Amino acid sequence: MVGDFFKRLTNGVVFLLAALTFFLVPIGRKTAAQHLVAIFSTPPAKEAASAFAHIARRIATEASSELDKLRNPPPPPPAPREPKPPTAKARPPS
Image (cartoon, rainbow, N blue to C red; front, side, top):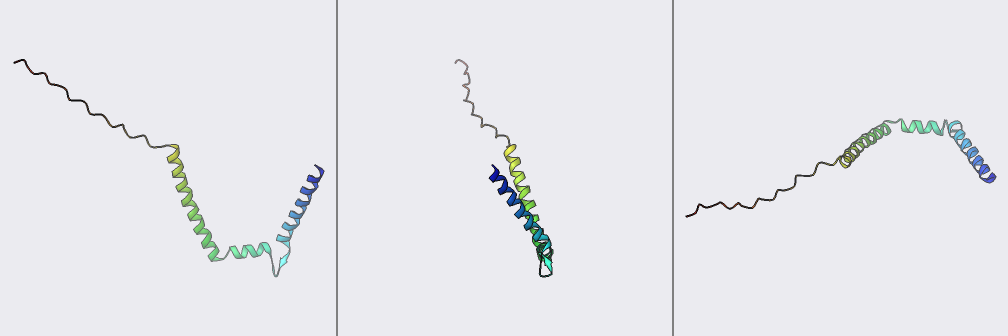
């Protein structure tokens, strides 16, 4: 129990140090976070994000319509009617 606590505490400290490094330590002239912002703010990256968003909306719409079909199935077609047997016509006595 105490070992798990120290393990989680150590993991938390390592995560905190990694996060601080990501945002505060420069790599060249920019930090890693600033490099990511610069990469993802280019026109090709924005175009790719727009395309992914368009496809995600289309997939969500299709999935929603399929789920609606599953939740509300169309009514079954009417059962075919069996033909009535011909009725015998009564002949007048001769």
